[in-house]
Length: 77
Image (cartoon, rainbow, N blue to C red; front, side, top):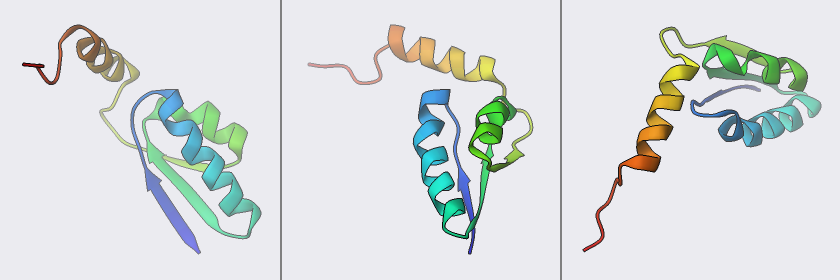
């Protein structure tokens, strides 16, 4: 079976998916990770194909994560 998993975020966000995909591959399936190019070294180590998404940079993720830390998403009343 061919499987595509689409993800974005930090390296910590992708690791569980890579473990799942490694298990799929070990059981005869063909997983493909779709995400930012900076996941390439991790996908390669897991033996998983990576298809990159254009226009998505690690700096974008860092900016969003920094904003989430400094600006509350939900205000507590």
